[in-house]
Image (cartoon, rainbow, N blue to C red; front, side, top):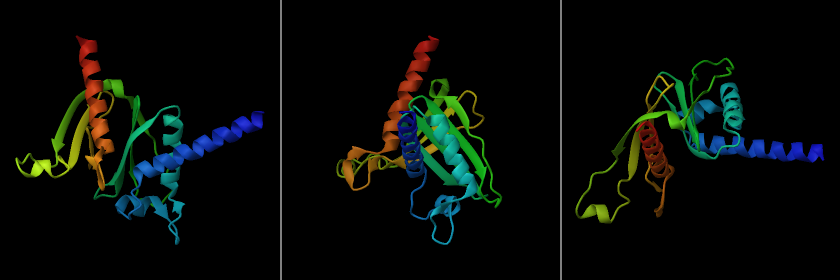
Length: 188
């Protein structure tokens, strides 16, 4: 019996790691993908990315994954953000270094939200806004106590080729607004 429980847990762990990888990597060869996946056949994780996925998986266990973003700065630093039902996980990794690293992941509760900013990717147009997937894209800036920087998250407002389905960034905006409202009502 113990063996079957462990096997089920291992399957859950593998599924979570795959879900995290899917959230973070576009698979389209962007700069983050180029650093995160290595080897002649491009089927192996870079050492730092393998360790990062392990840490993110352990820290997010028991949580629903809501949003993930990974970007590569011009200096070669990978900036990773994962949002779950109750946590914000971030890591900055110097991916320019070839040595295998085991990066730390910072975790803060979503309940520690301090501020929220948002920018729509498209302005309102009397004629055109009715025929396109307005606002096309969004940029959200969110600040948390215990986190030394403001997070900047971006994404398409709607699922590509399906304007009836909102994108993860739209869902995230609603989640952040709820978090902020709870924070305000808790301080009143």
